[in-house]
Image (tube, rainbow, N blue to C red; front, side, top):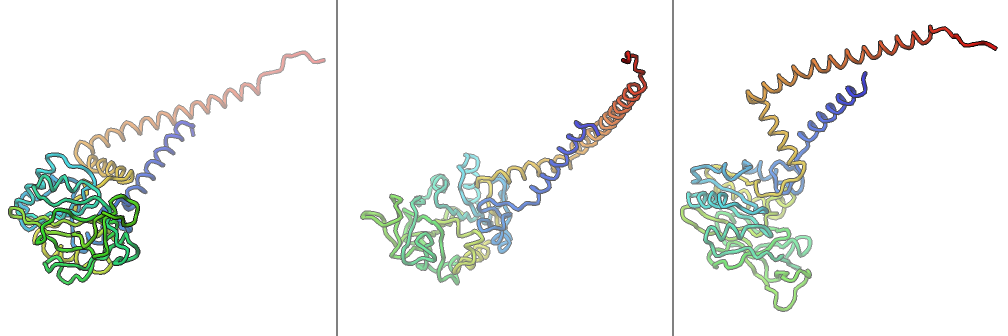
Length: 318
């Protein structure tokens, strides 16, 4: 086989194998519904039958009774902010779960005074493993906290400028905000109890703020009553339940999966199928031509070798 043709076939085979492996490899992105690992949300997506969204433009035009879980780790365009405003004002429930992302951009657009602090909430005593896992047991009776005795957070922050009547959950009296980042309490730093979950009525809908999106990941879902809280979110939803994935930073694997999905979707269109057929019709004659050319070169080389062996030696013998 001619070396360039062999190299071409081997390269194509490796590309196909790599594409198949990437297609079936599970996602490892934080908070992605397709991720079954500790940092994904596959468990809660199945518990609540939540549908992942690749764009906020996919939100239902009639949001009454629908719920959107939003983890805002990427900034928002004006069109996206307008879509969120329309969703809430039309009767939807927006669950904004943030710690160090762009949640305040959404709150400003919605006209709410509440904000995410952005400083780490630590609790050296009322905690699960260590001070980065605060145990929250100061709860206000509501449909969301029904049957919940305590929640466990993970590297959370807290809420500020929240009216007392809007707070659903607070950290313990031993908690504090690590405002200078030295992992210990210093004079002047804010101490608990501090709001970590709140509810705000807005137009026909409502906004629920959670100061820790990690509450939804697979590894946290089973701690204390986290799963009950998540099930209560499903219970207050009478229409569709959605998880936004368009504001989560995608990994290289996820980008590759999207490219493959786009290629698959294109091939299934009439134009894509026609292009694939044309490419196949062109490729097959090219491979046959290369094969014939290689055969002629081999035959020519054999004839030259044969003539060289038959050429008499006319040199002088001593």
